[in-house]
Length: 280
Image (tube, rainbow, N blue to C red; front, top):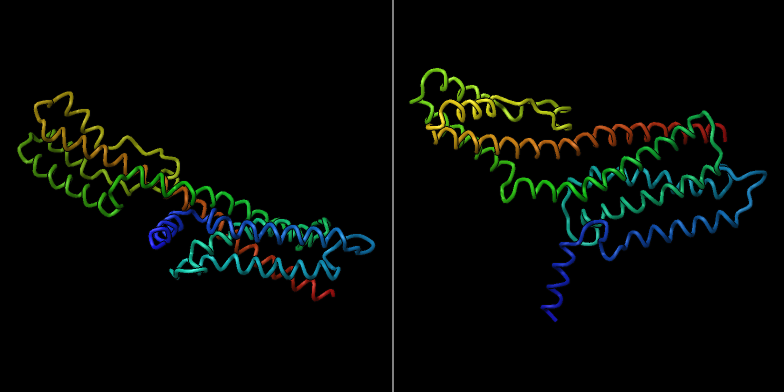
């Protein structure tokens, strides 16, 4: 029995947030959506369905509370706790209840749209959810891609390894002539962190002094085997680090879209609520 419990525990630990607790939050979100649709079908607001009916107000309140709760995930990430409300459970609920919000908010509108703050809040909500869907893909794939790229090393270990290579290259260049020593110095100044956000995101890094030095040594000084070997290792390390930065830039770029849109949604939602009660 103990062994079986340990196995189940390990399976739970390795289970992704999308399948957390055998899709617990997916099932809860599905029940919420089905109940909302059934009540909407039974409800008979006249003359047309709208958010001002009693059911519309109920859905609007639920939707607004859900939006505020879903926004709290950014704060929740700072607190690592186990159990039923672990970060994994919270993220799973965030995903599936966020998708349920599409149905809840749409039913709240009664499919009545126009050029007003109410529709603006709805559109911003849909943009936040759409960007959140992109975030799901990134969070589900990037950790594995980052791990495959860096192997057994951490980001800090890669930086330390690069600095160690640089020290070895510096020492090996002491016996070279002025021209080839200058090539090595240029290579040592080839900073993998100098690229801006757009270059990191697109992976369009310049050729770089390290690669140029390596090509020159292969043509002109193939006898300098130690320097050539170190430059090859440095070039390979730069490629790995730049791929690492590109993957991290994808998540960074997503945050640049998702977070500001979320704040815009909160502002529009506040205006929507104030307008509703002002004209009530």
